[in-house]
Image (cartoon, rainbow, N blue to C red; front, side, top):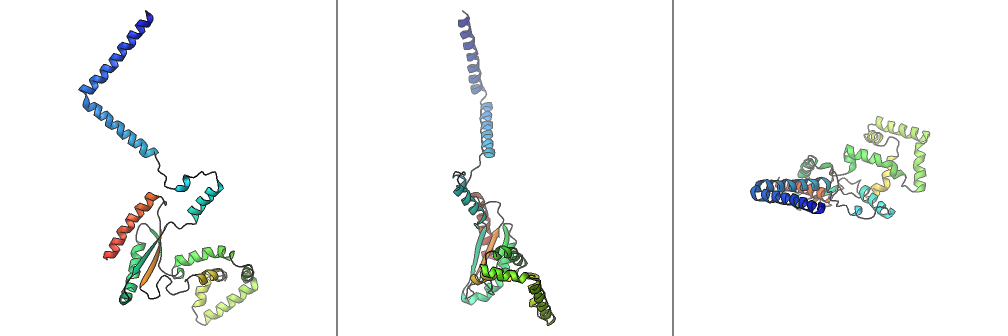
Length: 251
């Protein structure tokens, strides 16, 4: 009797719940649809806050291997993924117009919110470029040949420094502007030997290293300030770059 009473009680409770659900669905449809909408919004909010799509292929690989870790370091620290290259071309008859338009184009580039830096010529032509060359001089010294490195270190001897400063002083008194630049750029005389192999292998000493020989094309290197190099961030950047290209082409 006790068990039969238990089943009757459960059956009555089930009937009440089913009657309540049926009554709610049939008589309060607006409330049901509002509940469904709230549930969908909550699910979307949870997905948006917790789901993080990772477009970095190295994060898919097992991170416990040293080879994968090395590839991550190389990809993050040594690949110039934040650089863009712009080029202006003209006909041989419009070379002078290109020379006039290039500085205007560079100035517009520097004003873009996604642009961190523009290289439009030799690094020696801008204060930022000179500071960068000074900062990389010490690592480049360690890359010199052993005998060249030993000869360069001799420059730091007190007698060598004294003789160099005396020579530069005589040249300054003679009216030459070159010693003043040399003292401000390379006070100890170590930067020039460090940059010599770099200057020999590139066009850094040319008057216009990023210009074609016939002057019909100018190349501009741009470093962007994008927060990451993910696929979505790169797509967002390129949309802004394309807007700039359109306005630059019209003007």
